Length: 465
Image (cartoon, rainbow, N blue to C red; front, side, top):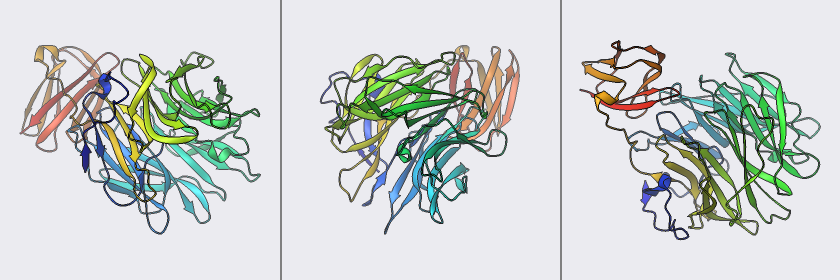
């Protein structure tokens, strides 16, 4: 694994945003072939474990799909092959219920493309074919809700040559597919690139590039109830003549966020706009321009724990992606150049519980070799050292038993993981002053105990010797 100290990323800015402080550019692959990432190639779970998926070109044609994760001690696991079959456009999501990663991709079944879904349990990948028809199913996007159920969207080709947006979930215990009948994709609907996010209730929010008969716009569909068949639709309006790319996120307060980029024709000028919609609102907010001094294609957005939105854009100059990355947030809408080496592409963005940012992309501007890279902190998750009087509980451990003595009433989630992110137990309940809760620990080692609800989040590190 190659690590490059960042010496070029701030040539255009004196100010270093706190979320990028101490960041390095870390190369996660190192070979003589092409490794690439697409949109939605990185996920972060509630224990700040990073999960990534990427594609590697294989000879004579096609791509294999690989997975890595970064543990709480900031070390990356060895890569794992997700599936032995040739696959395309992989996307990833992780569960806060059990820390598992889920990957969706498209692959050829006989003569047409179908959607496959894979899960990672205990380091073993298991895949199954979700769709099965005679026409192409492509461009999957995946999300996991707070209860651990999966939600997917993709593009389905119809017999008449048109295209529709599809949605599926296993919320009921088995997979149910449905077509978004009102989805308008236009003549070139195969490029609609849908993306899904779920709110805390489990309702799906899907954005896609649609055609309303007067140029491309980003369309939005919201499922009124989790797994239901009634959808609300909206066509998002920006000052652009047409909009072509976007990123969507739904935050912990059930606010939907959209980053949209488009142009006035012939690729110029390429402008970015930001929109939000609260759960109770009927429509998205008016456009706010992001990084107006730059031209860029939507990379990604993330909302931190202080409710500040952050954006990354892939810079474009006269219709050509330059390989530079632009960054902006709502404290500085003007933005700045974050990475300007001229060879970084397809920026993905996540942030951890300490508001440290991580940008996943691929590096390389030759047709022969590309590597997956991540720009962010190389430090482990910063576990605060808290005095007992400041904590919710005291931990007493011996042999393979951990006892938690509660010092004040607590209502919420208790999650215990090993230092490498494996879940030991995940418990939701009510605990009271003086109550002692005992659990069995499988082996000696270092563990994290996380207590989390709407009001507090404590992380305590302890050892079992």
